Length: 214
Ligand code: SF4
Image 1 (cartoon, protein in one colour):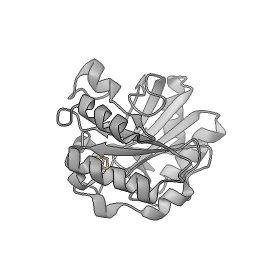
Image 2 (cartoon, rainbow, N blue to C red):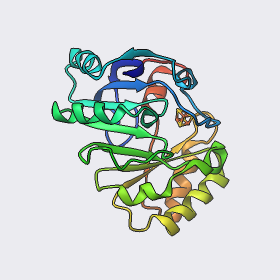
Image 3 (cartoon, rainbow, N blue to C red):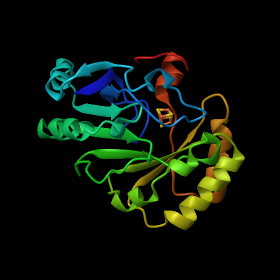
């Protein structure tokens, strides 16, 4: 069984598919405690309803999506998440997985687009990152840095230059909502000519920072 916090339809708010209609499958449970986390309601492993993979598939099918995002919490903390991803792929959905970067991604089906966080210093969870995951990324995958301040940005820039020069994945920089001005981040990106994409959280721009289930 999987513990599912919520399943709903909205638009994808982030990634290169921002703005595309999307069905969200949010798994419960996360052992990280990022300082800027906007889904603490999904932290507890039992913060959801126990559902079989078939029950999740049936609920997803109600929305007739083309794009499905599996997120959390940290979805890979539940072993059956891999079974769910495989089942979604078999049903020909376009599948994205948002993961903290703290768990092994080697069993994720290759056709799933992974959005892999690298936790910056201000997250408080920098030490949880599994650097070995980076070698498993493909061209359609994305790496996301969430940045709170200039210190995070400078650290991120060093990582991009030292650890990611050959990554096939697109790199997303996302300012912490209400703390780092996106205009400042864009100015730094352009000044340093970093090979990155700005990642804003469309759902917060549309519905506000505290809205859930959208
Ligand atoms: S990994 Fe994601 S869900 Fe877990 S604490 Fe960090 S931001 Fe929140």
